[in-house]
Length: 139
Image (cartoon, rainbow, N blue to C red; front, side, top):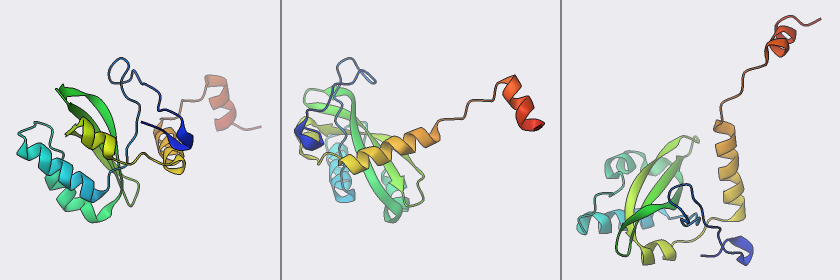
């Protein structure tokens, strides 16, 4: 549970109090194995096999975070798929604690890229009325 540079990942209260803050980077092969395990174990969160079958050749990156605990020794994870055009989506996938821990952490470059994707998706705040007037009717 170490982030780049050897520092420990912070805990995160976004999904559950004191939750894990790790961001993992499964490969497509990792995802397929983990989704198959979830199906074979009768888990309810088994990913999106049909969506990945249709889009797998366009997957640029997969990221996984712990969303919560699904049962003893099992995490409910949120997996985000980023496609070659920057689009994508997210879905849940159940996996064992050991399987999650074994996945590689994101790199510093990947973390910065993810932050920029998030920041770029924030909606712009409308201009204040006096700013709008100046914008619409420049001197």
